[in-house]
Length: 636
Image 1 (cartoon, helix red, strand yellow):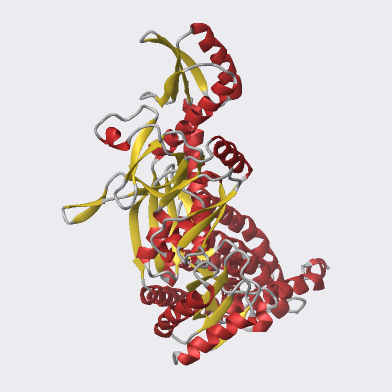
Image 2 (cartoon, one colour; image 1 turned 45 degrees about the vertical axis):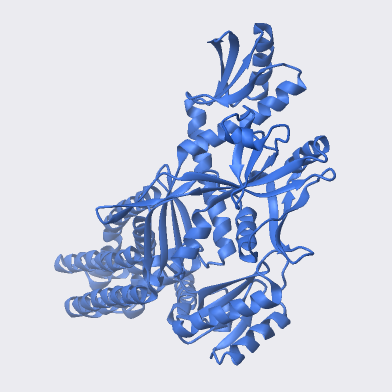
């Protein structure tokens, strides 16, 4: 009687139907979103519009015509709302096509309307694209491209931010009719110094400026028979300026990369002062470096027409002016006061004027437009100069290596024109040497000026062939690891080992699917190492379960009870081991950079999917095989 009662109370290892349906649904979703990775990618040319340019059928016909005339074979041409994509069979044909298409579009539409860039386009079938299924994004080490590690010049960032207060102080003190002793200058200790003849005036200025510029700390300065006032950033505010400089430079770099038309770039902060830029698929490092690292901006200043420039060249330079040369070597004596800087530019595009000469059309924001209007009204019939500013990095060879020197500031006057009438927020710059120079200047101004100069401290170019070799070696490591584990599990645990192998393959499919679904996830070489590690960890959970089942059988439990207790008792151990590893992966992702993040992402995803497949997935299969049956022996 006792034995019968025990038998009838034994668990039957059966899942409710909803659990099976849930597992099947997850498996189907995983297969669908992992499938695009089997189709690979095609070398392609991507034509992207700039501003209001249209992706018309006429443009598509132009591309097709030039390819046919150049006898360049292409697979097909796709057009969507974002770009026209031309696919090719190999990279050599792709390179030839880029030159032909670029020239044809340049001749037909100009330099600013479209960006022609090399790309790798997914060869995913249309029915999968309709489901928003796309392959995993591959990192630079797998796809090939260019890697830059850049360092932000923090001293220049702080000095530039503080120097902006010079013109603001002048304007505000004049508005309040508080007479000061020119010039207002930057202090060697940091900050802006303004001096007054009268102490009472200084006290009024102190109260006014302190209330108006709350981000600055003010202190009084005595000496030289004057009463001085210094406004400077606190230590905390300097740190804020540094952080802002990095963040704003990252935003500007993203805008510039978008102008280049690079697909799936990686731009992120590394440490306190450095920025990592990775451009998958880009091979022309010179052009990329030129556009990305150039700190280009404009300043609009009035020409000092009251003094002779020749006298200034002999050393008699007025305190409120400085000499800056034109491109042809002609000196110009310019006021130091800046009317408007490139920070106020919201749009810029190049074109040709009525004489067929290159020009850049500028649009300012509301604040910049107001400043330009007010200044031009006061200076009608006077000369205004456009100053182009660029920070360049020189390299010196030391011990066979090129060592980057601190960036140097290069200023040149590119245009001097007489103001005929009050200007608004729209005007144009002339005096440029070529249409290409106008195009590059417009691109840089449109993307935004870098807040502070950046210096390239590391540069790597990875060819597509090396990236393909990395993929093949990575896949080989996964295949070898998987094969050894599958053989071991099948030999050692027989039927249960076969179930574990099914769960392991399912786990790999789910990892690929999740990596393909997450927008920001990128598979790198360390990421492949994370997948290989996950393969071993995933099967480890099944080993714990199967060994627990064996222990139950040795202790005299029935097969059904052994299965039930094996899964239940091993669950806490599996959860503890995986949760601790997951925490480690999260920490690696939070504090790590580059390769470490790639490893952490695949490791974390693999832990979560392996928990599902090893516990819920494998048990579902075991229940289908043994559940509800009078089993005498388990093949484990």
